[in-house]
Length: 350
Length: 109
Ligand SMILES: Cc1cc2nc3c(=O)[nH]c(=O)nc-3n(C[C@H](O)[C@H](O)[C@H](O)COP(=O)(O)OP(=O)(O)OC[C@H]3O[C@@H](n4cnc5c(N)ncnc54)[C@H](O)[C@@H]3O)c2cc1C
Ligand code: FES
Image (cartoon, rainbow over the protein chains, first blue to last red):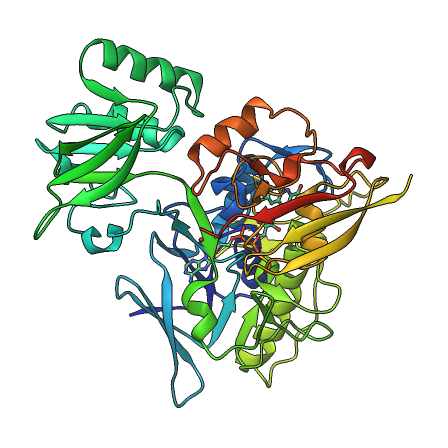
């Protein structure tokens, strides 16, 4: 069981900054994210786009903002459970919480801060009627372990970067790689498109375009995919079908935690501390709602800051704490690091 | 500059005739969001950058729409439930010529 002071669900900019604010109060954080990397929407949707409304940064790429946040929180040594979705929450008799992920990892903390943004990113599934029958029996939406494709016949569909990148990667692993896309043009980076062209010329990737996978065939596992190309429909033998059509955020299991939900977001007490209707569970950033809510990074930062102050009071009801400026108090990391403004040198003059 | 009338059929098949301002540089996806015709988090996920297709709609009236950009065209080539009359509503900017436009929101995926 992973134990921490504040368990943060969602490692987007809001969750990451909460680690810093908690660290100033000497509170330890652990973050859970369904994605394999931190950064939320900034890294998943628009890492290379500039953001213009982060105070103090006239312009910063979303990916760089996340890198900076990761650097800023480094001294506070947060723990991460990545690539796992927080599924259930249980309140223990002492008022603390146990959060369990879809892979069964358990986390225990007195405070839970949900910084889940628009929700956990789930694969977009093509509308093939019996698709779900083959999930984990030959159909995978995310490639976790490329080794399972060794010496197998693999069909990938999609026209973006992941479809291209994985097609390239799997040529060295799989017996055969077939890429099916509805168009002849691809949406990925130019060099990936060129690489696929090259591998196609070498006969290492079979490209079927413009075409679509419209059906799946098999008894206990996937045996064939049905491909429609123009007016022609044909079957292709395969062991794995990997549809890669990007991810779309869904509020998911958090919606069933007994929290008050309004318009796909969690209602919080805005005037006070961003706590939900369940004491000890906070919701910060894009995932919450209150009158006048704006889904902006800077609003998430603000909410994270107030949430941490309130969390501290919940954990230590008898301790009095006065907010200190970092310029005055410095930043003392859990790793022994210390940053503080240089003290003025006093010298006497004879 | 005046408001125009746009008819939007939501994902439950309900028709909404709404006013859309032509002087605020708004796109059709933002109109759908401002009238809350689709739940938060199910439309406009990429903020209108032709990167998610959550705002796909079917254009039902014979209006002359601006030509599709390369990005819109490619995004639609990856989207689901695409029809001949599919467009990304975030790429349709509200202009006087679009008065009377009728669209239906594509299903959520
Ligand atoms: C294209 C685009 C452009 C934008 N431009 C700007 C801008 O210029 N300025 C600005 O201020 N904002 C901008 N935004 C909005 C900004 O990205 C969001 O406000 C911000 O990302 C919210 O941060 P967050 O940490 O609250 O949530 P998110 O970034 O959404 O992160 C939430 C994380 O929680 C995870 N998660 C959710 N549920 C679970 C679960 N059950 N288990 C595990 N993990 C879970 C998700 O996987 C995700 O990684 C833009 C957004 C987009 C899409
Ligand atoms: S809002 Fe994402 S494509 Fe239109």
